[in-house]
Image (cartoon, rainbow, N blue to C red; front, top):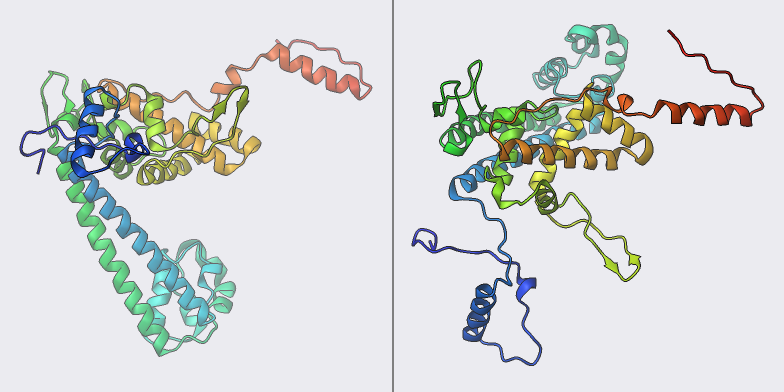
Length: 362
């Protein structure tokens, strides 16, 4: 309402304008005090994206909630089957496979013979016929079938809504000029930047070139960070705003361990999902994840890759002409000091009582 009236609105954290002890407190005095602090530049406004990005954020967060609801339905279905002593998930990789769904629908339709149900397996699951027969031998009856059908209907409803929201997100993002690409001839528009030789790709496609970030995740990340990176002076400011770095707690010579900031939970979730995807690739990010995971564990490695992805995002959105270039999984090997490593191995062998002579290969 205030923005529509042409006013510049700032959202400020209450901790920056606490009431002073012994000072009278009324609404009028509070307003005057806030005005003085703002005039002197003592209040830092929080990041509030423009209206089009806020609308996009509503769409992407609604899709996130629907995906979470669908996951919960699959988990409830698995628990329902296990309560009936049906252990399909112990043989199949997950219940979302086509074979597992065919077996569940057959049980709902009234089929109870484990051998018949196991014969519905497809692909590599056919080789697990004996294990499937044992897993499908249980106490599944009509009331389990009724509840399972309700859960499948709810999953189908979520699938339909997720598909519709995904299409709507793409349409809305195409209406934001800052997300448009630039063709080779300099023209821009909703469909620009997708052809060969484009001067700048659309924002979502630039992010989708990064390992681990799909087009859907790219739209969700843009909805949280916005497209104007001038709001964040450096990539480190964006990382701090997202809550992917620890706070500073230093007093005199002592540096205390501090918890990370609260940040944007939705953005951290999207980046964590992208980090898991990047960890499975034979790329620079995949190798970086493996190196950190070996030393400090998978949880810290996931956060580290999420932070790296956010830094990459800042650079790609700050410069529309920028493109992601992977350094390759062998990047760290090319940076190793070979002589230092050789000396380290020689010392270890000599400590074991060996005499080492090195010969350079041709």
